[in-house]
Image (cartoon, helix red, strand yellow):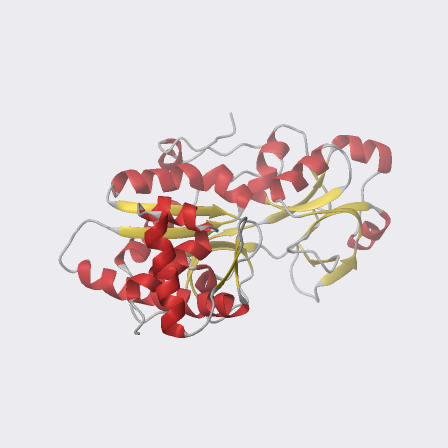
Length: 327
């Protein structure tokens, strides 16, 4: 018995959906058809892909391994087919899978992606908000948004913008604990750390004047949290000092809920990038979406402001998308 491509696609849908029932709903097929396709694939491969019980369907070790190998291959097949279709169609089709950090996505990308969907009504969009850095290839994602210093050289990336970082705390924290005047004094203060960036509790700075070696300090963090918005809220509540990207800190600074500290030093800025898996054929949908982001994220940006309290105007191109502003 030979395996069939439709059986492999059905297997992937069952893995992603978590059950035969959910996969059947997603594919608009009966549960019996889904079950038969899985059984046929197992017979063709000569292995069990799932452990079955009355309550759950659990992938076997072979099932997990087969899924991990097949997802990037199917992704490449889809890209190749879509790149050929794009030569004869002006409308974007298929599905675009996007992953983005939760706070940035919630604050700035929702209306942006909504407008992109409005412009391309034949395109399906699946967006995952996830602060943890995910594997684009294994996860089957077309595009990811990263706010960091890119380390994975196997990925392709286009820079959207630079994002300065600022060390902040609440006025109530300063009233109770004072504020550090030098980087070294941070070691004597309560700090709040972002789990996916500052896991080593080592903050790095450079002098505002430039030149010289970077300055590092090991922080004392009572709170470590894996969401940027929650980290900001902890700082506003007076629980410690936080290092935040300016897009998270800007509103709190403008409203006086946060104040900058260590203004004589600066941390290396983050780069906000659109990343995508390496492939011989960059699909039209991926290229069009990234071009759209690059056109939007140019100065002035919606979070731009000076740290002395002056408020910058939110660009019209973002206001038209009904992005949250500073009013």
